[in-house]
Image (tube, rainbow, N blue to C red; front, top):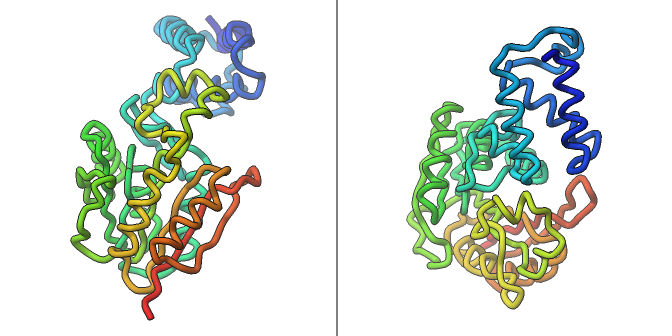
Length: 283
């Protein structure tokens, strides 16, 4: 099989499941993962005969993609904020929107030696990215899932960051053990009724516990996070949240009810309400 034949096979077999741009991106990822090729290599080596093992690996990937399994789980990694993070079905696949949340925090916090808490860390992508981007930050990350924490610790080790990982359930609203300059969270926020419009690759493979909240209680996680932040933030400290684009006002009201102030809403690159920030200001 030549490079060109492999590309044509991907296009033909995935045409019913992905559009042309998605197939192009999938092709780049597959060649990088299996052969460590860059996009330019795919172009320059179009007529090259590929190693014998490539055919079998390609067939397996195509079969799994046709069953709507996310490519990131198939290859076991995802790109986030310029780095490669290990992912398994125990953690959500990091989204580009969440990179914007990291950028927002970094842009607004140029100081050094900040104390940072990431609630519901999953793969650790937010906590680790902040540990790399902020100056001498002391970062702690919590999650209720032990398998998720194991993945996050692995990613922290691989990316040579110092992050403290703690098993903790924010729904129990634990007593803060230290004060933070920054608290960040991307908690579950998709309502159960929204499942009807979601893709199978998300519904069938990503951890539901990290995605969904009841229709009748969309603030299930934002309430305890806001209450915790009101106690755990230093005076002048700031809370950063990723949100359901339809719940910006409810989240803002929840933060206000917890005693937080200076509430601001930010949109993602698609123009959707996606991030809310708030400050703790003591009189």
